[in-house]
Length: 113
Length: 116
Image (cartoon, each protein chain N blue to C red):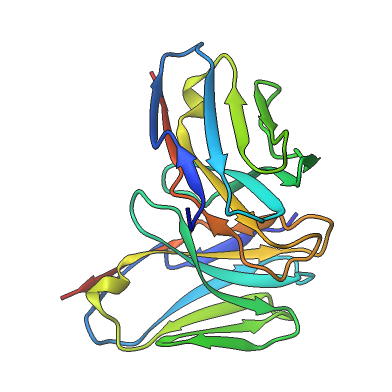
């Protein structure tokens, strides 16, 4: 059974710092991996989607890497801003008729102004 | 609307009552998903529709949970004889994908269900 773990569970850093969020998964047979952002009381916003054949994806100050063989992904946030404060969720999917995705519990990020 | 819309945003019910949660997906999206998110946890899969067909309901926690999407657009998640452990945020997501996992899922803001 696929399990997704995110470390740390919570993180506070001063504004302007670069930071890395970690995600690991137990079954390397994934189809893709996504990073989501969730603000309090809101749904999820997809930030980056990495296909299993890809190594990384970039969007603005965000860079996500994928090492499928070791079951790991990282989300790198450059020059953090207070507006980056949110919960970041990692999720993996398996090739199947459906797109059921398995989520981690998230990392709660707080950027200190 | 431009995004996935869920209603109501908040629902309070007494234990034993039935509730119905509605999801309006993005127009034209084939796939629709329901997730349950407990406090401090990641979302957990409940069920999946491709158009009007419910292809996977393996995540529904009990036979008190029922979902439908009769015309392949709006979906309703119904919970009968609610229990306190049903308290959670129920998220709906839709995507263009048909049998492929290459399209991102677009989430609504969820319905926060509280069972007293």
